[in-house]
Image 1 (cartoon, rainbow, N blue to C red):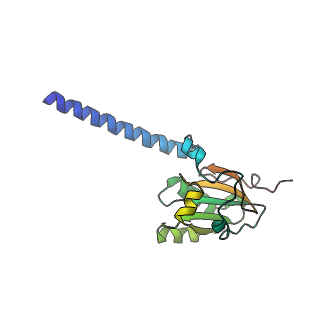
Image 2: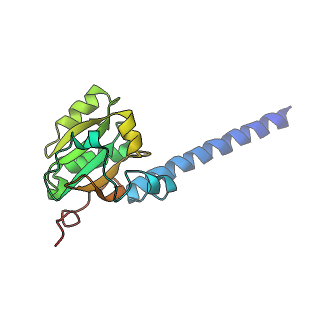
Image 3: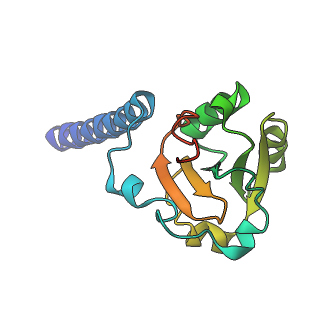
Length: 166
C-alpha cells in the first residue's frame, strides 16, 4: 500500500515538473522573441490576401503600408507590444489595434488611451477569417488592405521595414 502511494506521488511530481517546464519554455519564447511553433507559422491572415471587406471598412489605411496588430487581453506578449506602441510605435503612423468583440470594457478603454493607435472591434467571424490562432499578430497591409507581411511577435517592425517601396 505504501509503495503504491509513493509511486502515485512520484507520478504527480513528474507531471508537475513537466507543466513547470512547459510554462518556462513558453515564457522564454516570449522573452527571446521567437515563436517556434507551427501554430505561429499558420496564424494570421495569409500574405498576399486581402483582409475581410467588413473589417477593411473600419480600418484607416493612411499610408502605402499600414500596421495592424491583433491582441487579446490575457496575453503577456500583447501587453509588451501595447507598451511598445504606447512608447512611440517606431514612427509607423496610426496603428490599428484589433480586439475581439468579447474583450472586457476595461481592456478596450486602456487600448483606446494609447497615443498613435486606435482600437477596432473584430467579431468572431472576422477573427476566424483572419486566422487569429494566437496573439499578438503584427501585419503590414497596403492601401488596398492586402497583407504584405505577417509575424507573431511582441516587437514592432522598424519604420524602415514598413517604408514605401521604390
